[in-house]
Length: 306
Ligand SMILES: [Zn+2]
Ligand SMILES: [Zn+2]
Image (cartoon, rainbow, N blue to C red; front, side, top):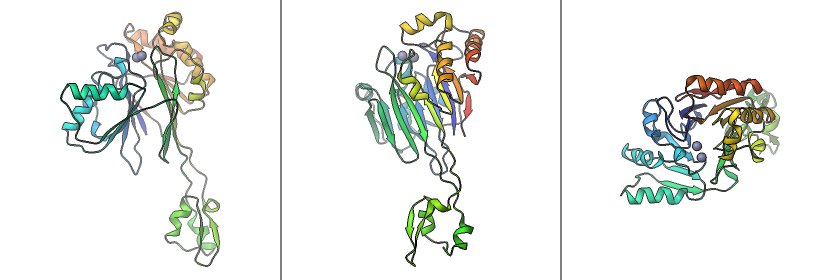
């Protein structure tokens, strides 16, 4: 799994930073899907500068309806249609996302030639497909805004086939059920619990991808002990009051949250266009003064997750 930042600027683009969009490449053995978090204007152009293709997108999560997180969506949806990829796509977002998508397609005489589902969410579990569980948390921003906690389920350990054979349990179709930790009845009437023959499970990856937010009560629970927390750092700490009054966080506030939530790594993004490269390094240094395992996302930064 890996995170690829397609846009890292707040509000408006700069020469080096497009507006917010984050690609999560799941790279699972059984599925090649990718998920997108927010879709600022120009996201489809950013895709062209990577080796990834919007046709592989399976789900899009929108944190909130501000334009710097949303205005790339109609173009991306239409281009995906023209690229001859029929795979279905689901969009999750706050109330209003359905109207926005339907209106943009209808008024521009556009359509998608793949099944498109738009689901308006509220706080709580968004879905659990057995591999991943995604939960939405309410944040503190002038419009309804969610952060997404993504939890990969732990992977069961390998089945100890040698020990099964030693106990007189022969390889066969029942092995598949035992592999999943299920209890099965053998032809001789014995009940065998797969859990007794599984090695230690591998912990799944846990991620917290925040939308725009001032510090808020839900943030701690959302980020609690994740491997990677992605959070906005719109302004430096000296401007914390201004940041908070507009529903944003300062560098130090973001780093304090990462420290308090005991996360593995903090990645900061959504930086104000007022900062040049040196300004961004200052934001990073402020964060690291509180929480050392912190990285600053640039456009096209790639962070491996597992
Ligand atoms: Zn924003
Ligand atoms: Zn916003």
